[in-house]
Length: 344
Image (tube, rainbow, N blue to C red; front, side, top):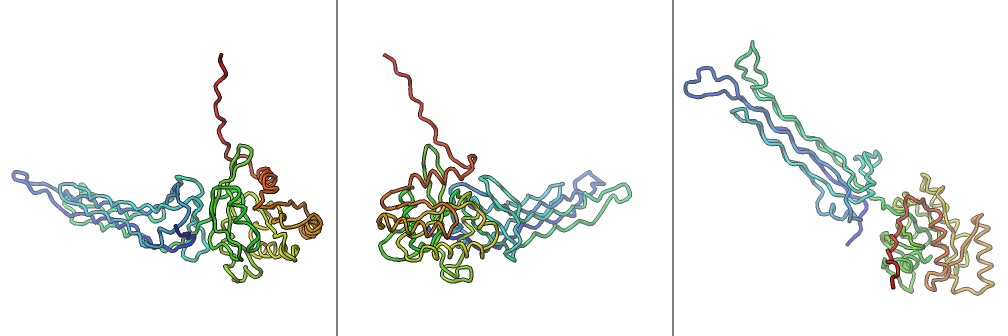
């Protein structure tokens, strides 16, 4: 399945049906009077967050969503049928923005959350509605209200607990593959991930979701490389895991490059809790480990953990540190297996 996190849709609610002008005409009924019914209400356009989706790829092949119009009223006091609604099924974490791509209309962050994007038009009144003691044979009716037409943007921000940050080839995909069932592309040549990946990581009978996004490079905020388009997927994370390649000759510069891009992105992303890890330490001896760790600690101004995703060295300690930074209400506790007591 291809990944798509931004798309444009065109929606239109249904117009209301017009009212009917009709009079009762039956044998032996001399004064039948008005009996024109009201028009039906037009269908509305809704958006609903559903489980099981993590991409907006469905909206690449269908961008227009038009609800049905309400049927006109009819004689014999019959009201027209209401138009059918249309529901846009979107992944959890989808933001719906106005045409300017800046005004946020709603943010769907929970399964089952539902919002009305365009309300259907009301049906018009038939001449039965205007009957009164002084106007016993009205010959007027109202047209139905027109539907609402809008152009909207859907922007997906994945729901994850931990976000992976780092330059390309810092070992983010390797870490995700080593700790979860996710299978991102991994190779022995330099390349970068092209779309975000999610993995469920477990440690100490708890689970949390880790998001791997394409690596940032210097100047990403100015549009270099893939830019910072995917940083929105880690905005909702509770903690950021910053991986630094231990085999690089410029460890401090690599760390500062990511921090600079976070600050340029804006928001509170740069202020989120971060765990800094020196990765790929299996390729370093003790002296090189100590030198690179000291250099990174000086650049970050905080503690640095050592890890190797390939050799699984220090991975458990990193996961436990991340678990401590995540709020308890976001953790998924594994149910304890019921063990029957031993009986002779």
